[in-house]
Length: 117
Length: 114
Image 1 (tube, one colour):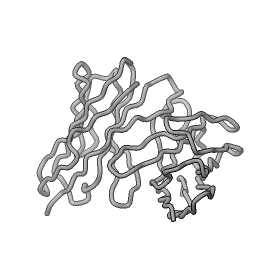
Image 2: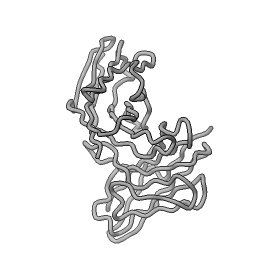
Image 3: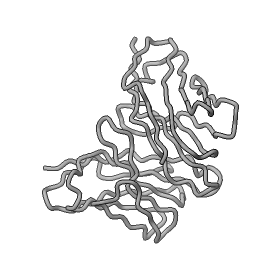
């Protein structure tokens, strides 16, 4: 069974600075997806960024980027130029890539990020 | 606007009562999911359906039931057998084929026990 571990329950950062959120996972699969989801106080789950395991290049989405280390089973999220609107719970998640029959996301317990003015 | 609608936003259950949470999507997605979120926990999968009239149990299906009579709708019933139902419930959907790994979430239902 896959497991996802987020070792930082809470973090804080000053506005405009950079912060990195950690995530490790355990799987015997070789083909899978990794995700970072954001859950602001509204509790809506918002996809931040997605990485396919077979791609060595790290995914980026504007101010958000990942450091994907497949051998180490590590998937950290870097937020650059932090904004007050980035304050949220961030979840790392894993999905096995079964070729179009994907169905199950396994989530970590989350990291609460607070951006201070 | 295309999206996923969950209702109600807040729901209260009395002891021994069954309650049903609604989830409707107009994204024409084949797959739909129900997740439960407890404080300090990540989301856990309750049930999922990849096609109309078919659904499978997730990791924590005991005390819950679902139906998938229409592509757009995937209601979740929390039965009296679920002894600890207080949680935040999220419905999601995804397309089949390319892009199926991208789940779209509703805004959730908070269920509390009176």
